[in-house]
Length: 104
Image (cartoon, rainbow, N blue to C red; front, side):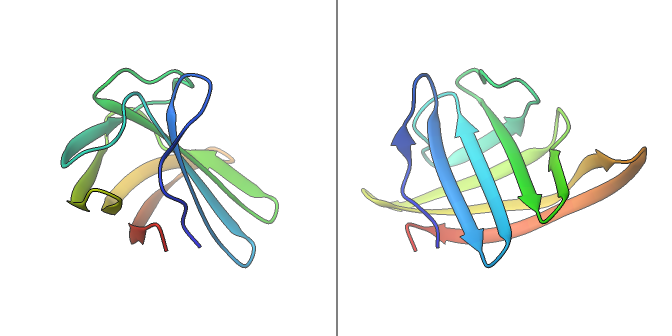
């Protein structure tokens, strides 16, 4: 399932999950159509998004500087895509890829 963006304490958050995989997107402003840059900061600015995830015992946060593509297809619906964004686990670099619609 994927939630619609909700305003947290200082960020607009989207939660996505399937079985044991959980992804959190934290935007500095309510997402609209455009390109956002990943940040490791838990307080992203208006053009940034913090993307963190976990699956079982593996967790991570996307490194600074990757792009997240957002298409707001209606007042209450969005499509999001991440193409090959790096993250590190146990000193190795991996690449995160996802695309989804929300809410789902």
